[in-house]
Length: 171
Image 1 (cartoon, rainbow, N blue to C red):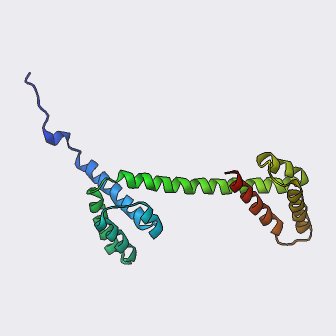
Image 2: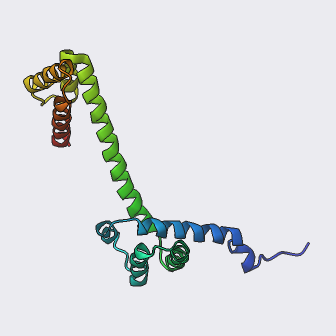
Image 3: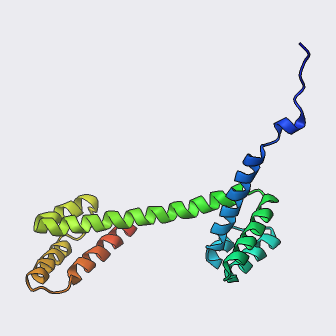
């Protein structure tokens, strides 16, 4: 049996793989067009043609023209290494996810404290030992008075802001 030398063409990615990569880069370019100008500056994209194309795409209102322009951005993306841009975007989104999760956690803590009443103060103190017990008690009692008088939940908002400040101090 003769030795078989693989052609260079066989080592190249398939047409489908190249197409998937082009679509991935085009989607990455589209996500760049959605960023604000300060966020785009943080990415430190060095290719001026790409930056210009991203900024131009934001102004295009026609769907077909926008689609063509996104394809152009995808073409420009093929000429650079997209990995640093992808990492920076992941870091931005990860930071946002963390903030959203912290916000939801604080909302849940506030709801639990208000639901348990005065005994809920201990729940807040277990998470934030530096919290002012008396201030927490006053906010809980004010919330209970607001409920009985059918007033807007001002104490609930104050409690959330106080818990948020405690969480920021703790970080």
